[in-house]
Length: 69
Image (cartoon, rainbow, N blue to C red; front, top):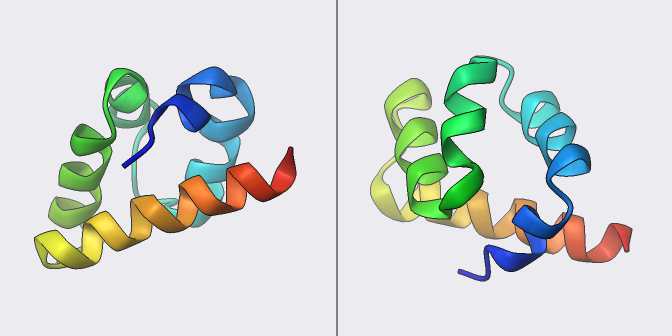
């Protein structure tokens, strides 16, 4: 997981994460700013994904953010 891509563009990333995972609260997304593991955990809890599935979702977000640059 390369969280530098996300944290380096946090304002843009927040909106993107909120759009993809609308059930996450702003506070939950803010908690994840420092660490992708936290975001994966929040996604896993809210959406019922397995740990691997949640990590795949975070990897998708990272790839999408990289493509936006």
